[in-house]
Image 1 (cartoon, one colour):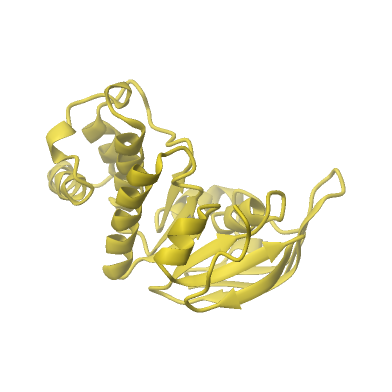
Image 2 (tube, rainbow, N blue to C red; image 1 turned 30 degrees about the horizontal axis):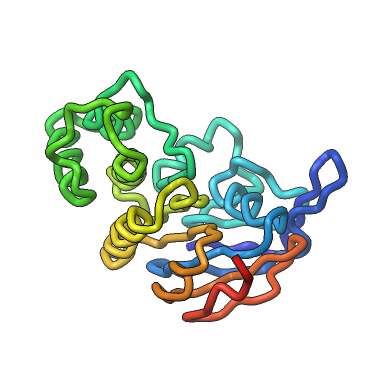
Length: 228
């Protein structure tokens, strides 16, 4: 599913964000990526969807070698990867329905298929009744639910989330995590970078801890392991 072999990433300013990373994430796993600020978590996540390219090493996602992937082929790669961010990245002039449908329109899906799938996905995230509303009319938690719906509407094999509860209050965060748990139960691989100690310690999954660009801990049903 996702494999990194001897991956290094050094930025032009000399900062090394990945320092010999070797990791394999299997189909259907749920993985937390944890570590102190500046440890290299975001770079680790971004390399999985080719937002960043490694300086050295091999990254394979869905049997595609990202190191050799042409820039023109990156959109094709991302059709099978759902991405969820801390700041939602919704299109404010589009309704909830249109924001989610947009992800299917760009891959030229049939209109009747789009309508059915979008409404099913909005029902999954509990927002079917707000399909005609604009993002500005929603709470932060609801906006994140829309972002999640958009990320999964094309039934990707993997969902990559970078601090998806970072801007949300604790109660809302638990609601968002229930959706990720449901997505994972349906067979989708979930890789989530997070600083949320309570979530990692209570909804236990595999934990990969990164410090100074290196994986220092990789354990099934692990704990957060840092003071938050």
